[in-house]
Image 1 (cartoon, rainbow, N blue to C red):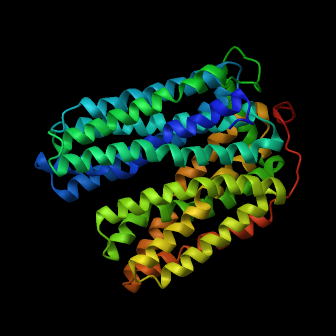
Image 2: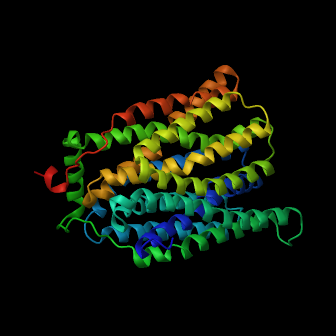
Image 3: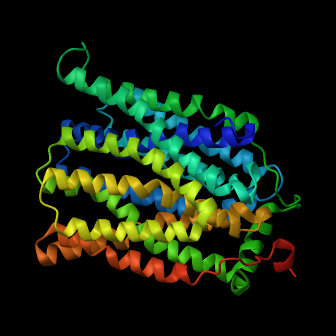
Length: 424
């Protein structure tokens, strides 16, 4: 950290800030809290699960569709920071509301959650795009990897606090209910996210931009049309996005299906939480290592290394039988999960025209969000057909192989046209 500039440190700390939301709200605590709240209100398990699925799908779809348009507008001078701040405020406010809305109001809780998803997802579009403003191309791999490493470390602190409150309340050591403990965990998340975003808001500014025009919205739609019209000029960039779509789908599927997969092996919820925690801790140094190695051996090669490790993970999963096997699998995931995500972000940032970074990171967001469709479907169909969960995870090899083959076709060096060249 001492070798980074103030802008780089401030940018990296946002990964530290928003990681609390990722693990406590979307993964570990709020899904269980919502299910319990809905059950207490007399909603059947099937119905509440359906509502949970609808809420996630709608919120993700909405921000994904809007991402390129919002990004294109944000490319104009002064808009990137405003959009980042707006979505950040949206996410913070409604995350805090999760802590104060009574659990009996399960439907309003779900609406608040949807707005946190939109705020979190929207903020990340502009956060990722700020990478081109805070550092040089030579340092992007290192800074992006540092961000993921800090995120993994940062996520463990509020996670420990939140889980400790819940466990202590379950054991009646604290004189509060589990519901109240969960609400305190949501408040910790909002405070953590807000406090550590201050450096980003204070020190990071838009360096690369297009000058404002009288009608930025209509002009942004024209810009998007021009981008699609001359998509061949951006062939290396969109070729990378296509590769990214496949391999990140495999990565995300393993992340999202891990808890269900562990449960199928008979691992109890306490052990699953411990494994999740240790995975976060181990992932931090490996994310940093990927950044160091990418500077030495090139980011594309390290991305391929990460994909190969995931192919090994899928192969090992086929033979998984014991808790020890699951631990080994989790540590293999930890070795490459953060690295492959961090280098994907920095590799893409080097490809995009800097003054159009927001528009293209809008596309990046779309490919990331929609890369959560094929994998779970493939696992589900294969597992159901074979009657074996292990076979379902093994089937993800297909996505990693396709991603690797396409990635190999992305040129090592290429000159990407800038906005002035596509508007002619």
